[in-house]
Length: 266
Ligand code: DGL
Image 1: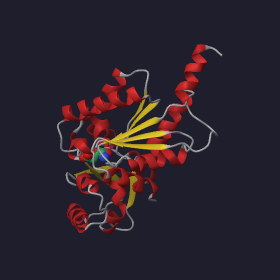
Image 2: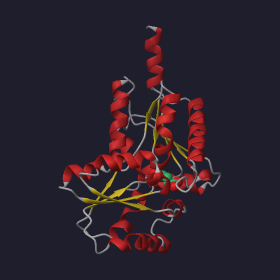
Image 3: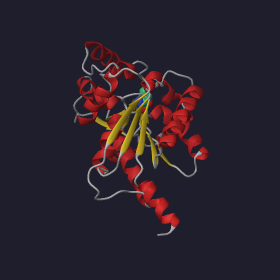
Image 4: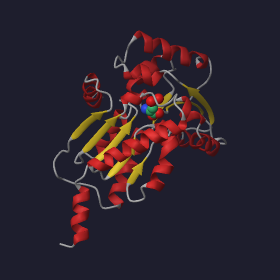
């Protein structure tokens, strides 16, 4: 066998790394495992540095770069940045710095409502950093003539979700307060622009009209990862179910347990 073919086989058997500031990206990991069950995954939650959404842009870039370097030392075939905030500030730069690695990011799912509705009003819940970054501003400009987009920064929500109690009175109260100004307004779609938020979708649904459709970028990101691996010849097939390994930058054991619980939750 040619050396290059051996190299490709070795690469194909490596895991896909999925990263986030904490347990949020597990909402994306779920979609990845669903459509690519034969792959191995390393999920790295950076809970020691969470939340990212209220940090400085340069901070989030440096942290994400260091996390990628650590994962490259372990050996990975692709990186999924399952964090809207880290994607906003780091994806472009990390792709330039790592031209040989497949790097997939996530962005608020603003496009699907534009395809489904005629000029919908779309509320986008995300972290303050995601919403002020150039990446989101240009996405918003791109759809400005097809949707009315209302950005809604949710500075504390990811942090509350990290505490692990997903239906706590505190989360309920915070979500109610965030959404109450829009109660009388006609909203067609709600975009969960932070990967933590799908974990509290049930709470969010309490405070929007049942006619509001909720979107997140998890499935689209998983599909894009599959496409990229396939076109690089790196997709595994028919080799039994893969494994998921959880790593966390915090030494709080509870977070690994919470991560496993969230992966199995529907
Ligand atoms: N889960 C992340 C996102 O998608 C970040 C949350 C945070 O750490 O503030 O934006």
